[in-house]
Length: 186
Image (cartoon, rainbow, N blue to C red; front, side, top):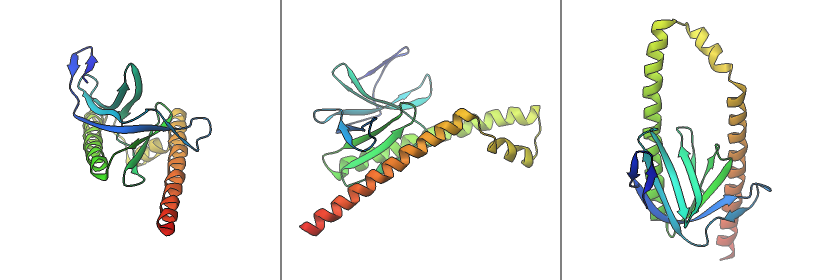
């Protein structure tokens, strides 16, 4: 699959097959399958917007369209399952892989892309702080006051992400308990 953008087609940086799940948005307790089987999951780089995306399309239906951010966390909850929070879409996604090797490859690529996103963000911050420093010098006290006075929308987003992470942690804990029970039973 190629991604059509206003700058032409782009090939994926990474492609794999996985079963796709989403935490039920109503109950926030159970996983709902988004795919009937393993489907393509791909990572693209949009050079126009300088963002990376995790994208999965099944036929004409978009299953995942997540922009990778520098603050995203990707959690491996078992040997074949991983999850992340897409705070922009307000979803928790999960991927089920056929084996641990495939999961590890996806995680490695995710980390690589996340690091590239973080580097781009640092470069942009460095450029803008250089301009700010020339325009209005600030003391360390000014910076600390500014950093604690977060915009309410940012605070709300952080609260949402925190809630999603709590859910993901609870789900991971339940998965671990089930695995332990399975091991004890066997």
